[in-house]
Image 1 (cartoon, rainbow, N blue to C red):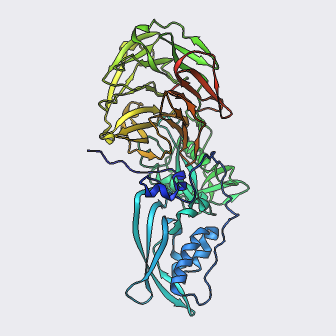
Image 2: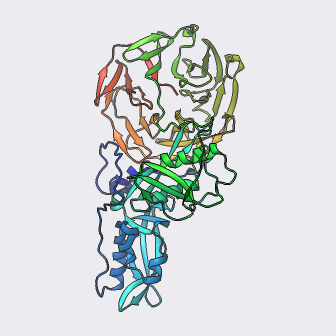
Image 3: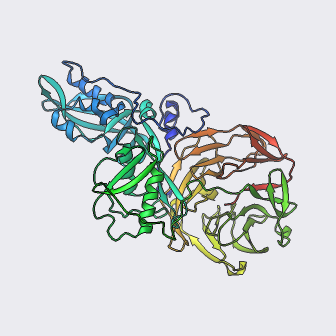
Amino acid sequence: MTSSVRRWRPLLALVAALALLLTGCGTIPVSGPVGTSAPDNSRPDEIDYAFSPPGPEQDAEPEDIISGFITAGLGPADDYSTARSFLGPQLSRSWQPGSRTLIYEDQPNIAANTGEGAFGVEVAVVAEIDNFGRMTRYERPRIETLDMVLRQVDGQWRIAESPDGTLLERSSFEAVFSAYPLYFYDPTYRYAVPDYRWFAARQSLAAALVSALLDGPSSYLENAAVSAFPSDSALARNSVPVSAGTAEVDFAENLFEGVPDLQRQRMEQQLQITLQGVTDIGSVVMTVNQAPVVVGTDASEFRTVETQPSVADTQIAVSDGQLVFYQGDGVLTIGNMQDISEYGPQDPAMSPAGQEYGNQYSFLDSSRTQMVMVVNGEAQVVVTGEELIRPSIDVHGWHWMVDSATGQVNVVRTPPEGTVQDHQRRTIAADWLGDRTVTSFKVSLDGTRAVVVTQQGSESEVFIVGLVRDSTGVPRGFTEPIELETTVEATRAVWDSENAVIVYAPAADASVSPERIGLDGTREQFTPLLGMTNLSSAPGDQIIMYGQTPEGVYSRVSSVWKKQEGTASDLAYPG
């Protein structure tokens, strides 16, 4: 029986055509077809609003007041002042538009209920955003009825009772909401881990981001990423004023009691990198009763967090039965490594640079039944199985290996200064996989997440799952995964940045179109390459994407695939 996996789709799933939904493709469509689109890092201006929906007309009927109120959800200016003008005096003051947003398709059905001024608004909900910006999409539209009561105020109908929150027609969603990253830490506090949320652009955006940050990471990052803020942290007021580019974040008085300087500095840094995406915010100051909090001088353990970690441009590859480095357009020999040709090596992996475990490599043998680890030039079989897939090595020195035939996940590590014989090994439970077959597994450079591609029958799925570790960095389990929507066939995936993955399906006799999926909802389909059997990419501004075909290696330059002179196979960047 297939286990339950929480369904989630990035923002760009909202721009699929309605026909996709009707044919069963799990998307939340807006208008128009999906095309090739480049990531858009711009942010809507929090002061200039593109939409100014009209207020209530004189002597409007109750149904018109309700329709106008729904339409006014397009205008977040002045804390939804236009929408509030459709409400009675008391509800206008108490209504909380940010508590949730229902994204619906088709026209709402407004019908009178029993009771004076009582109405029911029936909507087909395709997605919901909670008060902390977390989006939940529904495989099929969910019918929800909202009860409203209208009363006359000075001879005009106004809504006296209504649930908190707003309604948005699916075609209007992208015009009002944008994806913003909250940042948490990996357990070592070296890397910033993005957690994208969706918010409407309005004056209280900064406060909404901070409140969501204080609430903690999403479920797929829970216990994989950490926050510098205690779990009971809260704002002292529901606003974050910005003056001369500095955001003043006011906290409850007891928050900083007994909190050491190191933690205060990490708290400040976490706020800074989270709010840097908001227009006009250049710096952050933490306050209590509007007085600045003393964070002290940088503690010796404090480090500036890496928000965009990157790898070197050197790849691992196979040539003439040996592991080699592939750099630019050439093949380089790896020194002090024993002859491994007897294994028939394929699908190699290389450890990220700068980790305490030194340069390590692993690969599969020709039958895909053995994973071989190479440490200090010495090779040894450390994992056996039935149908192993390409290994992945994380920043903590753990080699991850999945047996696609059994679903078993193994991790192996050699201690610092150790030899391959000193390896530690663990089996990680992955009950969430159920009956799915894993075809690809790649750990993110920060070590907190993995992109996993699975197949079940003819259906393939792409997931992001958090990696749970103990205080020493030893892997212990997985979080609840989220699923990414693709528009191309996918059986393999690699990280392109800490915010995006590239998926594709190898095919030696067909054109393959890789697709880049951003966790912020952006999506880009690349120029196809005929016969692509392998693709390599990784985080880094200078990283070049490579594709492999039966004809050789190609690099992608300015959207064009260019044949390379270097002869090698199974290229992979560190990780």
